[in-house]
Image (cartoon, rainbow, N blue to C red):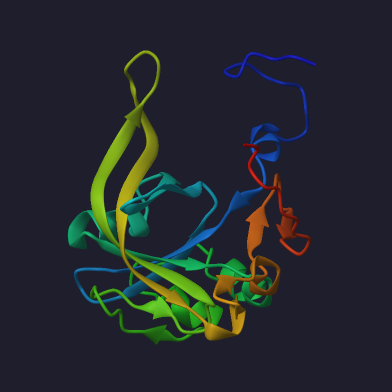
Amino acid sequence: MFYEADKPHGLPHNPFKALVAPRPIGWVSTKSKAGVFNLAPYSFFSAIGDNPPMVAISSSGYKDTVANIDATGEFVCNMATYDLAQAMNQSSRMVEESVSEFDLGRVTPVPGQMIEVPRVREAKAALECKSLSVQRLVDLEGSETNQWLILGQVVGIHIDDSVLKNGLVDTSKLGLLSRLGYMDYAVIKDVFTLDRPV
């Protein structure tokens, strides 16, 4: 089949997100100016550079996460793993700004080392970040969309010793969650190595 992206596709659900998959989940913690801790999963998330390390997050709507990063310039990308799937899912609820999703997910905030935003203690890895920019995206006609792009530089990295093997992160032991389409998720278990051709 083929369909123009801005026209009806005739399918029961939008297939776009199922095609651009798997997507890593940035389980983003922030702190409001009032001091309330926020925690929300974002599957439009990825690393965009390694020297210095940088990440990107995209949000559909100017949500608390975007507002907090805009106001404070800091956030943490906690790595969502299989053992934390239910907690991550609970933290995705739409609640009042005064409610901390750390409580909804029953996870523990731990103070950051380099920033004022807490990470999730139970997460096996977390990236402390400082914001480089918060941008409202525009479409081909130059019209503003309700999509927001956050670019951040990683200033501190937490890794649980239990997922290190011979000095390397054991990705299969880490059990990272990935978002697929619809309500589907996957967990990384099977890993193989390919050497670059010379």
